[in-house]
Length: 87
Image (cartoon, rainbow, N blue to C red; front, side, top):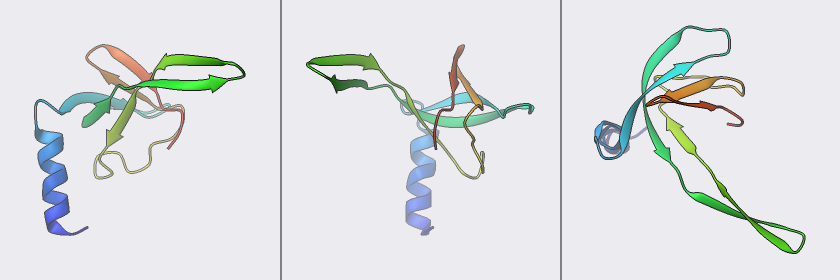
């Protein structure tokens, strides 16, 4: 990874307005303190003749901290728990 890009990512994760402390728990593993960027945008999906609104949360992790996240692993941010559903 180019140094400039890596430095920019480090700044984003370190920024207190963007990055958050979290606990990553691999399925059956020990808790690990990590830094994450959480995006909580609403999603609108079409289903037949209806439009469905749902809250979504997408969480970015650094590969240096979590090299192999898997579905079933958990992330806890400020008391809220999120289950990894995809990569």
